[in-house]
Length: 339
Ligand code: TYM
Image (cartoon, rainbow, N blue to C red; front, side):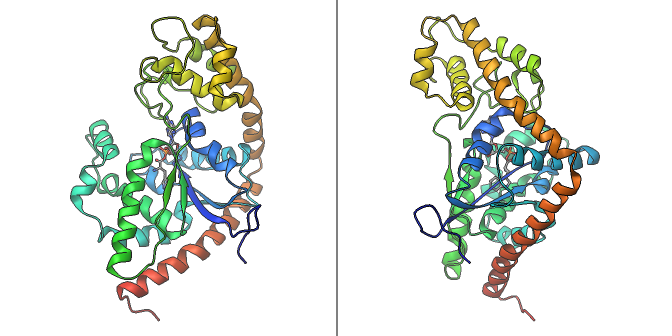
């Protein structure tokens, strides 16, 4: 039966995923998870833990396993409700790899070589520029297209991947007949790209070498406050949102508004006349206060493996139902003989 939204209309379908590499950062939270939780009432949501994407960079197996459950527990601790959303692990649904293979034949090598993330990661992992790293956006397109997703909430670093998913969908639809829904990216108005605290021009990333500029969702209170106290600001002393001229302060304001629920204008008023030191301390304390209950709920959930496994089993079964139906349609259209 089709799910309905508050206005009584059919709910639009929404898809997103996070890679279980390392601990997640407040960038992942602000850019994606916060929206994923907020959108669950209005949309029919499918949320994956993208472990197949994660192995495009070498992982320590035990850590990958641990991080996978950690992401699930974090999803739930951040308010994503497994009763209302489908939560599953990408590798539990074989259709992702299968559709990615078909979509590979609708994707050009040159397009993949031009992807910014591929170029960045190739430079960073020059000893392991594997085919999976290059094919990453095609697997991501398969993720989204399998679930007929109309909207995909992500940070702006994923915009290029989303555009290619749209291009592939359109290409396939034009070659056969309308098959895939062409998805739209949804980016937060503020915080679509949280910057590193020590270099706001750089994306805050799970895998930065210097972790002092990255705030992890599982950092303790003292660590969080210390990291914010050290954050770079800009010349002058005014707390004003101006990403062009004040990238450091604007980044901190984005973080502050995401965790306090206040608007940028309210925050600017609140910190009018404050020095940067006082402002940075307030941001650190706000983030630490907001994360404390999330962290304890995540820890509680992680101690209940039976519950988490139940969520995953149920999620994989639900995901498979939709994904296998899309895949079967694709196989039919391309001429695979089916029994
Ligand atoms: P990943 O795991 O790198 O990041 C997860 C989500 O967090 C967002 N994000 C940020 N947003 C704002 N500021 C930042 N500093 C920041 N860092 C990360 C990302 O944009 C993303 O939304 N390829 C994806 C995972 C994926 C996916 C998908 C997403 C696989 N299949 C299908 C959507 C749909 C990725 O690596 O995200």
